[in-house]
Length: 405
Length: 233
Image: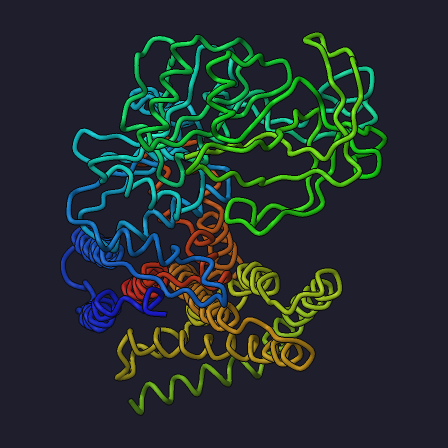
């Protein structure tokens, strides 16, 4: 409630402004009308008085605008920055500069610009500039910004870019820029993993026989695009610093990596990489490994997973009762066990997914299945070329996220 | 004060004793009422923002018809000279005419208060934007009225006064449409001059003090110009 309180200082300014302007008006309209002298002299004097009146009007308006405040009368406080964003702006102790490159025709971007302006009014240390890249393309290029609706946040020599129209995300970006030490997430690369810098968002249309990006196909699967750029941006928007980790080129994983992420590697790891991961985990590191069908485990990595209580096979999960459409391999998971990671996940589908089997971990390691296929699910072994080999019936644990600490 | 009250009374009688006031009120209520009925039927939402926007557009068209006669008619009939020959100051004439015409505008708006009552009867309207919307309408109408009064003081022809007021009001209303293609600082200057840009926050429930200051300051400046324009007698 306090966060949405009226700015009494600005209101007091306005309450002082109004009598002052009324007094000037009262004085102005009582000025004697020019009736002496020649016609040109009278006109000149009248013009000067009118110009002076216009100048007073402009100056008075400028003064009020500089000390502006707003009263949001909507029930949901639609035109007021989120309390968390306001708190961040008010709590600043060092100068922060925000340059918002917004699309002028986008109402959401206009609102975001207004919200940033309101945040800037809360603290003189927060300076805000809004730039429409369509009107000032050179300025956008100078700042290295290539996206619409991107906020460039600068604190001393640190720069953080946040894309979006949500002032709460901008506030988190300010906190990131202020942070001397950032929490780093290291994304492994070097094995044809998903790209972390892709920008594409589209809906795939898959049919049994073809794959296209239009609506000609019969089955529809929504995906987030070829890559994990969206995941990276989401992580960055909540305050993490995502870095690339070319695992094959390092002897050990940097200790400042809070989590190591490997998303869909397609070539086998080198023994040294498995060893580096093992050492890292033993020193208290965390890993999020997403291994898809076709990825062959290097013996060292297989052994590491085994000590963690996880076994992977080259097979695919199918469920004859619980699946999407008519494709048994597009497994439906109808519910999740209570767990902080999956508490917001609802009914979901996992197409062509590789199973995980839980084994007995070494002492001190606990395994927890986060995603389980139904009792009617089976696995179908596939060769590297994904041709069926054998069929056996078992309840599978779907892969990702195989998380160990 | 007595002089002002007498002038106000005279102007008010002059306005309401002529059919034009009643015709304008009827037209205003017809258009705004139609908007209320259709928006309610189509959106099924207990909100008045569409009505407020429509009312602002109708005021843009109708207020020049109210203000056009205020001084132009006096000048045309020669009664302005007679009035100024009495111990009446120019500003008293202008303020009295402004107050009387604002009373007529308030009388036009008053019957529309039944709309929020209807909404409250059948639903749960959001009152904040309704309050700010009506305040915005009064401020906007005051600006139009003061502008029309100033232009009416410049001419003896009512049609010319109305046309000038309508043209200038319309220009200031839509001047920000060019802002999207202009580079800074011109885009910001046009936005600052735009009546629509200053009125929209009132209609949506987010009142900025600077927007209220723009209408108040603009109205006072236009009234000041009207007083100075009386020097052209």
